[in-house]
View (cartoon, rainbow, N blue to C red):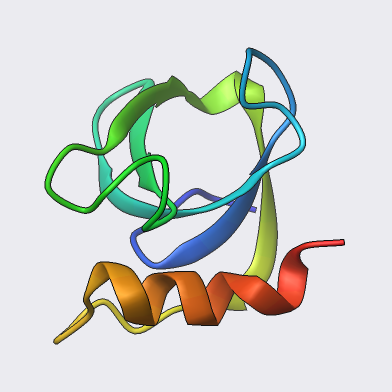
Length: 78
């Protein structure tokens, strides 16, 4: 599946592996991800596309805040 804005992803490499994020922006080989807690929307993490696993779930990024993002990702945490 192609990485696109609003998709929920799981980090599979790096110090944040196993955590759930949402893609907030996309570059050539990189995506910018945020979770609303450790990585806020104002300062998303730049992550290689090879280091994430894309899901079919999406989050509407219009009018989203860090709090709404945390609530949306809460269903994915174990």
